[in-house]
Image 1 (tube, rainbow, N blue to C red):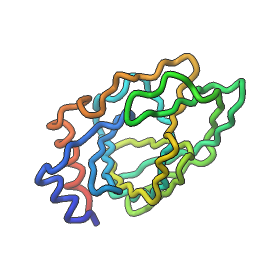
Image 2 (image 1 turned 30 degrees about the horizontal axis):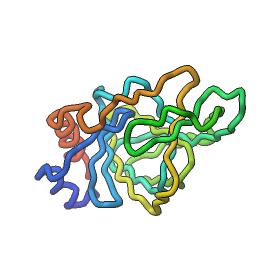
Image 3 (image 1 turned 180 degrees about the vertical axis):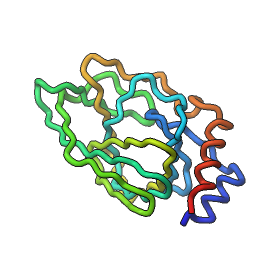
Amino acid sequence: MIADSIRNIVTQRRVRLTTHPNGYIQMPVTGHTRLHVFPDIEIAKRKTFVPIHDHRCDFESDVLLGEIDHAVYRVAFIAHGSYMCHFVQGRRPWLQHADAICAATVATLTRVRAGETYALPARVMHEIRWTGLAVTLLTKIANYPNIQARVLVPIGVEPDNDFDRETANAQEVLWAIVDRAVARVR
């Protein structure tokens, strides 16, 4: 199922892997696709775990190995909420000012298994949860460069603006996980 081009990228180490702040590995495949490898071991991630976020693009994600739980959130911007909605500037750091106070509740929680696909439009808050090794191939469908991605941070918690996805984990550590994962994808 996994394309030869992805196996070639992995075999030839033609790209630099990065660590998503929420603790999984990102590997660029093309300008609009990237492989996400959700490790079955702990890797360095941002100190403040804030997994609820949205994107500047519409996307589809094919689960190639394992399974993930995809939670979509309903967000209400209300004064008595428990989150601050922060804009993301580039890849890091987050802007220090908050957009608004909000509440977030799970609207849907879907287990997506190998061979299945899920999709998400831009500006919809979501979270990915996983246990065990999992691999997805994310494809951007439409990009909206005039909007900023956002992340929900619990009130009273400082965002971890020092996290550096480029250097958080050694390339050798990330490649060992990616090699093991891609070898199991059919």
